Length: 425
Image (cartoon, rainbow, N blue to C red; front, side, top):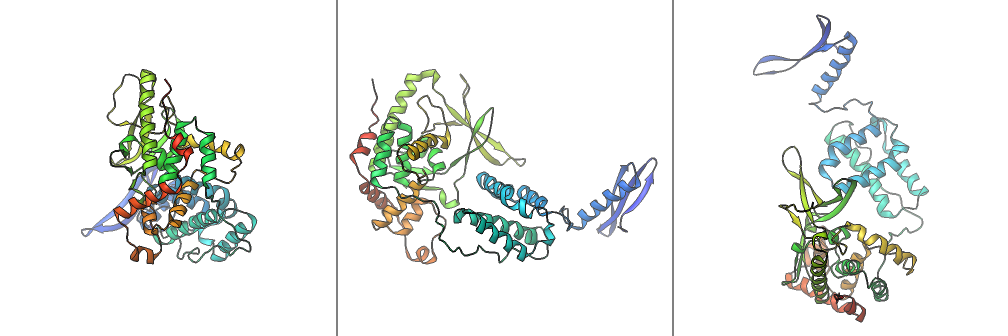
C-alpha cells in the first residue's frame, strides 16, 4: 500500500501512515521494532486496513466462511445469545456447515450454493423440522450480520433462503401423556420422592425442565399458592466447582408467576416437610449450596454459578434448592435422566420426554376450554398469533381458573397416594 511508509530506525524498521486530522492538525499512526522491512510492510498494511474499517478486522474478502463463523460466534453470539443456544449453534456449525461450506471464501458463497446445500441436507437427513429450522437460522443469521453488521460482504445471499417442502410429513418428536401413562410412571417411581415431585411440578404447571430444576423454596409461596419463575438451570463442562449455572428464563415473558393448584400445593408442602426432616437426620452431613456471581470486565453479572458450601463457612447468597437427593446433593436436570431411561426401556413408553409434560399440559387445558391467551401467559410464551394477542385478554382470575381446570382434569388415587410423602419413623 502506497499510503504506508516504511523507514529504518537504527537496526529496526517502522511503519507510518497518515490518518484523519484532529482539530485541523495532521495525525499519524506509527509503530517501530520490526526486524525486517518486509515484516514492517506487512504489519503496516494490516494496521492501515484495520484503520480504514474503523478497527474491524477480517475486512479482507479472502476470509473463509469457517473463520468468519468463529468470529461471529465470538463477537455476536457470545454477547447476545444464551449459553445453551451458543452450544447448539456450535454443534450445527461443526457437524453440518463447516464440512460442506467452511472452505469457501465468505465473499464467494452465493444464494445458489446455499440453496443447494440446504436442499441436499434436507434430502440426506431425517432430522426433526425444528432442527432443520435451527440450521437455517444459523445460516441466515451469520450472513445477515456479515452484510448488515460487519460489512464483510455487499449483499446477503441467505436473505431469501428457505427450507424445501418435504414429500413426506416429518413430525417433531412430541408425546401427549395419557392419564394411564402418568399413573404408570408415578407408580413405578413411588419411592423416588424427588423425581415424582419434579414430574408433578412440570405436569401441573407446564414449566420447562430447566425452570423446574432451578427452583428454590424462595421461589415458592405456599401460603399464596404461587410459584415465581425467574431462572433456568444449565450445565457447562465440569471443574472443581461443579457444572451447574443459573441463567435467566428463555425469553423475557418467561419470567412469570404461576398459580399452584390444590394437588400440587399439597405435594410441595409434604415434600418440603420431608426435606426438612431429612436435613435434621443428616445434620452436618447434609449438603448445602450458594450462588457465586461471575462478572464481566464492566462489573455486570454475566453468570450465576451454583457452588457447594464448604463445611463451617457462611455465605451471603445461600440457595435453598428444592429438588435434590436425600442428602441435599444437587444434580440439576440430571434428576430426570435415569428415570426416563427406565420409562423408555422398562415401562415401554418409548417416545416421551420430560419436556413433553409442557405440551401435554397446554393441550389438556385448551381442550377443557381455557383461552389460549391464558395458556400462553402460563407457559411464558413470547408470541402467539396476532388475532390472539389483540382480541383475547388474560386476567389473574382466568389464569387461576386454568390451573384449577387442569387439577380436576388429571385427578387420580395414585397421585393422591404419592404426594403424601410420609416420613418413615
